[in-house]
Amino acid sequence: MGFRAIIIGAALAASASVAFAQAPTPAEERRIDRVARQTPLIDGHNDLAWAIRDDHGGDLDAVDLNGDTRLLSPPLQTDFARLRAGRVGAQFWSVYVPAALKGPDATRAVFEQIDLMRRVIARYPRRLAFADSAADIVRIHRAGRIASMFGMEGGEAIDNNLALLRAFRRAGVLYMTLTHSTTIDWVDSATDAPRHGGLSPFGEEVVREMNRIGMLVDLSHVSADAMRDALGVSSAPVIFSHSSAFAVTQHPRNVPDDVLAMVRDNGGVVMVNFNAPFVSEAMRLWSAARAGEERRQASLNPGDAAAAAAGLVAWTEANPAPRVTVSDVADHVDHIARVAGHDFVGLGADYDGVTYLPEGMGGVDGYPPLFAELIRRGWSDADLAKLAGGNLLRALRGAEAAAQRAQ
Image (cartoon, rainbow, N blue to C red):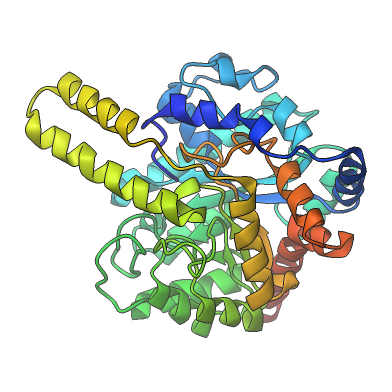
């Protein structure tokens, strides 16, 4: 989950700049279609549930996914026309816990979002169907609908209680991101001060129980040491539902090369995030500078939000964001494929959870330009199919098999 409300206009400008990205040729479109028909394109992370809840008051009547959601205020990055154009065959819908919510409040927020997404699925039965297994995903994709899974973002919601973890799995949660932007009682976050050197003993117990009940362990958002600890404990393949490569962009949310090698040995999958500060080093630095300026403006204008906002706009006009392109995302996909192998990379765009996206990739129709770029780099149809969803299906089947052995 990102910070959606910063500069939505800038994000829309980027999404409209598809002219800067080379569109797929007819031959490339045919190859992409062939891959997408045979293998569901599975995205690891979409924050539509929280966007509907937070930006639109949870009002499903106000958010018609059959329409163009770019016209809403604030706009969304997800609707059915763009999902179809993007060839999306299966989607993990994030049920997210903001860092500010603790204990029972966090637990309640997740259950409310599960309820919201079940109502969304029921509202569009010709478009969506709930999936709880690899077999469900394949069956629903073959029926021409989008398989819909729940991924829980933030282990704070289990309130240090394995009974709640099991309850979330029974409610349909197929993966849990161990934490979000803050370190919690049992796991260190990538973007907060560490307290445990990775996982605490209870954190290791959480991973083992997730293996036992068939819930994928998601290591996006955790510290590099927590990644290593979890990979050392897990008897099932793990995932990174929306992370990129640290060697390409040195954001703490990204995955170091030694961890990529561990993912290969574990049989897991790293699903590449499209968030511009995660895929471009120049954008990472610009984003950090902008965050610093935002704090400076607040300090210079105490109690005057309008003046602080105006100062930030002036700074942004004087310091425009660097260009981020499809090629930047492809560099991360390529790097993970080189270090870990083509069998261990996937897609987790983070749509409706981020503001800044690469040119031509501003909504859920943004996958074909990436596939076209990879085709130009020499990727085979077999490797494209692995990236699209084959690798995630293999990892999920591995987690299902590990659960059967444990039980």
